[in-house]
Amino acid sequence: QKEVEQNSGPLSVPEGAIASLNCTYSDRVSQSFFWYRQYSGKSPELIMSIYSNGDKEDGRFTAQLNKASQYVSLLIRDSQPSDSATYLCAVNGQAGTALIFGKGTTLSVSS
Amino acid sequence: DTGVSQDPRHKITKRGQNVTFRCDPISEHNRLYWYRQTLGQGPEFLTYFQNEAQLEKSRLLSDRFSAERPKGSFSTLEIQRTEQGDSAMYLCASSRTINTEAFFGQGTRLTVV
Image (cartoon, rainbow over all chains, first blue to last red; front, top):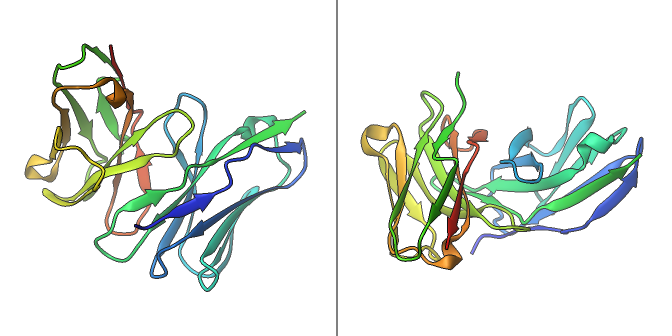
C-alpha cells in the first residue's frame, strides 16, 4: 500500500515567519510531487508541483524534493494570516498509478 | 479553460437510497480521479480513469460504489444503498495526462440521514 505521511499539526507560526511543511512517501519510484492548499469547507487548490531533486521557487513558496530520502517539503516565506489552511502533499507514482494524498498539515499564522 | 465542474454541490439523501454524482473535467484532460474526504482527513483515493478506461479502484471501495466515464468525457459516481458512513465530500479532479498537475472541482457534499 503506497503511503504519504504528513505531520497533522497544527503548525503555528507568527506573521512574517517561515513555515516549513514536511512530507514523506513510501513508493521509491514515485515521479511527481504536488502541494495543495485547502481552506475549511473548500476543495484543494494546487500551489506547487515538483518533479526533480532540488528546490523550486514560486513567489513566497519553495518546494524541495529529495528522492533518495523520499522526502518533499514546502517552505512558505513571510507567512500571512491568509496562509492559514491545511496543506496537502500528493504523490504520483510510476505510470499507471493513482495520485495519493497525505492527511494534511494544518497551518495557523497569527498576526 | 473552464475548471472542473461537479454536480450537485450538495445532496441529502435517506439511508438506503441510491445517489449519482457527475463530474465534468477540464477539456482535453485525459485523467479523471474520484476522491472521498471526511473531516480532518486528506482526500481518500476511490478510482481513476485514463480516457474511458477505469485503471484502478481502491481496495477499500465497497461494491456499492461504481463509476463510469463513457466516451472519455464526463464521469459519474453512483453509490447504491447509501449508509450513514457514506456521508462525506466527494471530490473529482482531472489532469492532462500521466504525472501532470491535477485540478479539483468544488466537490459534492453528501449527507445520509
